[in-house]
Image (cartoon, rainbow, N blue to C red; front, side):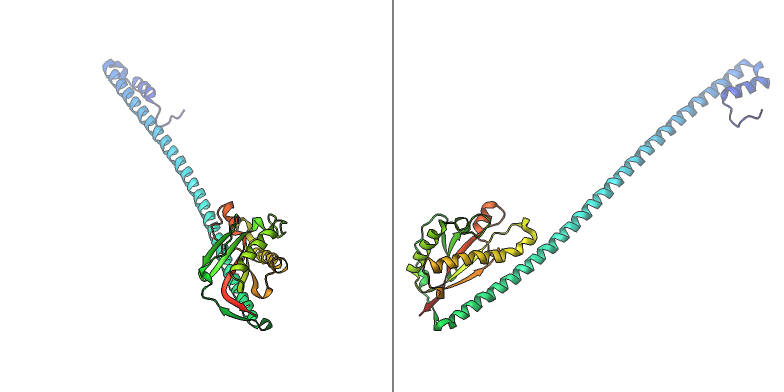
Length: 274
């Protein structure tokens, strides 16, 4: 039978005995001790190599796990970046639409003001002293303030309409009539704008475009009440819907959005003379 190149220390010892070294016990014992020492050293070396191999295998597993986590984090960051780009594009489009709506509204105001100059021979002249006195209106939720060269009387939509609608509340007529009486007492001939405003809720998304028409509808209801009940001459009035383009406070809270939904009676420096 053919043997391998390494048969182990015991095989070598047997070979030594067979070749005649067994006649010298001291020599035989020295060779056995040496072989045992070599066997112990090789066993230690084998253990060290196995330990090192295990450590390298663990390091490789850790690196693979770290690489997988890095790839996953990279994918999350890419998705977040794509979402931010999408939101930025949407915000840019909304801003452009809002600017277009504002320009369209400004043109409507200019056209309405110009038409008033020609309506039934009525002429409009400036009144430089009208800002000296504000209307004496002391009603809960009604704010009166100067804004440049106009005076704004702010009527909260919560006191005018049912929630989320333009249905006129029964008790709202008294509010509108009281405010109108005070305005006519202080400014009987001034041009008055009936200007609707809505809040802006980011959750509306595409419905934000509808706020422009909604604010026009609000202003139209108040316009009709002013003419039919408060007896404000129609020649003094014009109406505009601003949508959510001119908030007075932040829309970040429910209270802010409620404040921003309003109808303003805006007293302009122009005076209508019959």
